[in-house]
Structure formats: C-alpha cells, structure tokens
Length: 274
Image 1: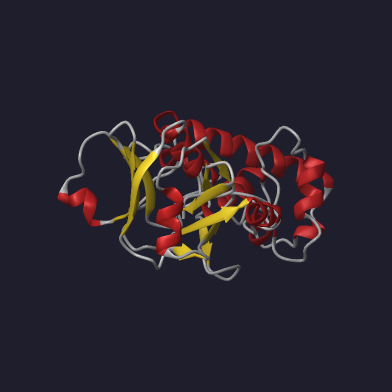
Image 2: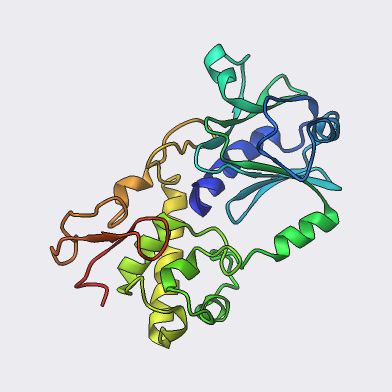
C-alpha cells in the first residue's frame, strides 16, 4: 500500500494541474471502492464543483471542495493521474473514477484490483475522520517526545505500533522496517519498553528516511506509480525491506524475515537490531 512518501509524491504531482479547476463531469465505473456514499450522490456532488486544493493526510489524498472533501486512499494498486489527452482504451480499462476538468484534462483514479477507497465527507465527517488519525511524522512539531507520547504507551511491538494509523500517520511496512533497522531497534520490542535514547534514534531515523523517500519520489516495489505515471526511485535505497536472506549492509549477517509480528513481512538483522 502506498505510504506517506508515495501519497505525498502523488499529491505534489497533481496539485498544480487540478487546484482551482472545476469538475465538469464525473464518471464512476464501480461502486465497491465507495465508503459511506452512493454513486449518484458522489457524482452529483463532484459535477460543477471547484477543487480548492489537494493535500495529504496520512496515506490519503484529500481534495478540498469547500464544504466537502473527496478522500482517496489509493490502496495497493491505486493511482491518481491527470491526463492531458483523451484516454486510450488501456487507460480507460481500470479507470474507476474519471473527473473531466474545465480545461479539457481528466483527473483519473485508476485501481486495477479496486483495493482503494473513496470517501465523500462534509466538514463534520472530515473532522471526525481526521481526529482518528495520529500525528504527522514530518511536521515540525513532531519531536522525539511527541513521538514517544503518541506511540510509546502501547504494549504492541514497536513495528506494529509504528504502522498503527491511530497512533502515527502515514507509516507502513516499508518505512517501519527501514527506520527500525537504521535506528538499531529490534522490531519485536514492546513499544512501551523503549528507552529515551532509543526514541530519539527512532525519531531521527524515521523522519530522515521519510524525507529521503519523498525526495526519491517514493518506492515502487510493485504497483505504485507517481502522479505522472512514472516509477518511484527510493526502492533502490532500501536497506532491509525486500532483502530477506541477503547480507546486512552494515555487518554482513544474513537478514532474517518473519510474519510473526503481523501479517506483513518483517526483515531485520539479528546482530544490528539487538
């Protein structure tokens, strides 16, 4: 699933093309991506409305229409791209939502397996939704102390706690693996048992890696594409994710992998992450 760096990249790519534009007409091919809204309500709400801005919250792209917001969580196979020309047959095949803009371009939400979600929220609905998500790790106010206060009270493993969107926004499996490795922390450690210096190291490494991944336009491990349809580049810089069975870049120990902590693969070094 696209994480903070991937969604941030998509939002930055499409923002110049859609901010200030009016949606002339919208089409939805499937309803299984909708949450809490019907097809007629969504399409009526989008038609004739002006996109005031686009931002990111956690792993969501948020389109601001004033009194309403379209919240898009791309899921594992979703993408958002603005097309300058008429869509080809291949581009239309998995185009779940097509929003024709007043300048002739088309904003497309494409989702091959339709694992993403679309929400159409009023101000109150957005406030509730936003309040249920943890703090943003790249915000200036997100200090090591703030991180410990948000994530350090649970008895979950630190890796699982980092990915809990109620505790911390935008971090998923890729960047949790990477941050724990470079901070030298065992991913199975109970979050509440980390020391002050460990929180400082984890805070520093998580922010550094997320910022570097944004600069690298995200990680294309499988399906992720940027807002221009290109592949990300940060997968070339991953030190542990996807490298189970290979030598550790720091000590040469064979990297281990396990699914015991959660349903996803956790890759770590027995020697470096004690």
